[in-house]
Structure formats: C-alpha cells, structure tokens
Image (cartoon, rainbow, N blue to C red):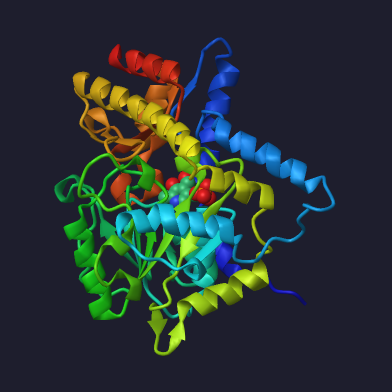
Length: 404
Ligand SMILES: Cc1ncc(COP(=O)(O)O)c(C=O)c1O
C-alpha cells in the first residue's frame, strides 16, 4: 500500500497569499463598489521590454522552420545565455564564473526549493526571521526541520536568525552552528541589504565552520547604493562556500515567462565531491531545460537595448518605492527598505498586529499589503508593501493611507 510523504502534513495552514486572497475576496463581495489597490504580492505590472518581445518573436519564428527548429534544450541551458550571464553579471563585477558553473532553470523559487535535493536530511538549516517562506517549507517537506510548534510559529529543528530594527533587519551570526545558511539580499520581505564587509563575515564564518550559504540574489538589480554587493562572489573565498540564486523575474519582468539560474562554483566541495556535479546530475535527471524561446528572451536582456529598457523598468518601480517610503514617513510611519529593494517594510501603528493592520488598511483605504507575521514570528507588528504596482495606483494608495 502506498504511503504519502507525511512531512507535508506537518506544514502549517495554507499559503500566506491564499489567506490574503480569501480576505480580499470576502471584502470585495461585500463592497463591490470599492476600488482595491494591490500592493501585496511581489508580482510585476509592466509589460516585457520591447527588446525581449522582439527576441521572443524571432525565436518563435525559428521554431516554425525546419532548419532552425529546436527540440529539448541542453539540460543545463544554452551556451549563448550562460556566456551572456558570465560576461555581464559576473565579469563586469570582477568575478570569474565559468559557463559550466551556471545552471539555467525556470525559476529561483524552484531552484531554492529543489537545491535541498543534493544535501543530506541530517543538515541543520539557518534562516532569517522574517524569511521568504519557500526556504523553510521546502526543507519541511524534505523532513529536515523537525516538528512545527504552532505556539511559537517555528520549527523545532531550524535555527532562526532574527532580523529586527536593532540589527537593521540583517541577521547576526548564529550562536548555534548551522550546516546550511539561507541568505537573501536585497531582502524579501524587509527590503534590507548588507554591505560587502558584512557579507564577507558570513563567507568567512561559513568557510571556517564548513557550512554552505545559499545566497538568493533575486533582487540584485534593485541595488542603488555603492558598496552593497550584487553577488556573494564579490567576497573573497565565497566560491568554496556559496551557491547563488538569480532570477529574470524581477530584473526583467519574467514572472510569467519563467527564467532563472543557479551558480555553483567547482571549488565548492564536500570532501572530494563537487556540489556542481551533484546539481548537474540532479538537473539533468529532473529538469528538461528552460524553453529555447525564453532563453533567447533572457539573452536579449543583456543586449544594449535590453539593458536600457529593463533599467528603465527598475527605475519606474524604484520611483514607486520612493513614493511609498517618503509618503509613509511624512504620514508618521516607521519605514525601512525601498532604497535597494522594491519592498517597503513598515511598523504597524499603535501596536496593531500585522493582520489587524491588514484588515484596517483593506477596510479604510482599500489597499492590500502583506502582513509581516506571514514571513515569521519576528515579522509580527510589521507590514510589507511592494513597489511593483503602477505609478498611478501607488500614488493613490499612499494618498489614501495619508488620509487615515
Ligand atoms: C527572495 C525570492 N527568491 C525567489 C523568488 C522567486 O523567483 P522566480 O520568479 O524566479 O521563481 C522570489 C519571488 O518573489 C523571491 O522573493
């Protein structure tokens, strides 16, 4: 008789965004005349850049011609895209990454969820609190996190690294030694970043203790300040301790088009075993390659036109971030993020819980955000707004909040 993976039964409640959707649906059914503005979920609103669309059209035409038709793409990605990544994302920052250290995929969500496949169950993970939920839930599904403790909103076998106002929403080196450390900068949900010297401390710590860092740099393109690293490999020694995740979702609006990549340097080893080989084996077995037309679209992001156009999209979202940050600050809110990230993290007023503030904002301003407590216990009392809305909606949402 078959047996299910009982780890799934340990997962608490439903996914955060389903809870939000349910509350918004109930509100709109009761108040059909209200215009809701959604600054909750981290999805982009601008259409794909013209250079990307042209590349998609060209590649689609190639697929309709016998001589240029493509079947399965190479497991690890087309060389033209991997070369463009190595040249543009790394070489320009003084980092040498070989083409066979880059693995093309269909998303950083799947990569961050799947990367656990190459690690033993008997590894202790450390995560930021609050955190992008996929890191914890995917480890829970694998049976690595122990038991869920509802009263604490935590797992028994996970090291939580609080990211609070006192720490500038960055984690501190943990007291207990983890085996796998998840870091995400610029951060979702807090919008925080760390300077290169700070990240270097994590790299040194991981090399010293034999831990691996899974570094999610999905929002790297939003960095505006000097001295904030775009890649963990800008730090000395990172190639022996870090895996980096990147995505085209937020830097080029590919949330619905799907393209990402993972970097695993060949120097990253457990004894004599290269993690690069394990991931190549895993990728080759369980993944059949991102579509040719999408990889062509991804390569177009690195052309002169592509860079210019996607750069303008990022500037558009970061202008929204500025409007939110400055508007809320003027209205007396305690706000962080939004400088190197498209997320604004605000303290709920008057000691409201995150969900109380969610309901209040929905009811009184008809604005949807994300309760901080959905990202972990230290997110309680906080709220996330995203800069991914339209300029007009962002402006209107902030005007409405200011009037409360
Ligand atoms: C930190 C972080 N990593 C990864 C992802 C997912 O990226 P992708 O669309 O490439 O799956 C997101 C999306 O919101 C994210 O916030």
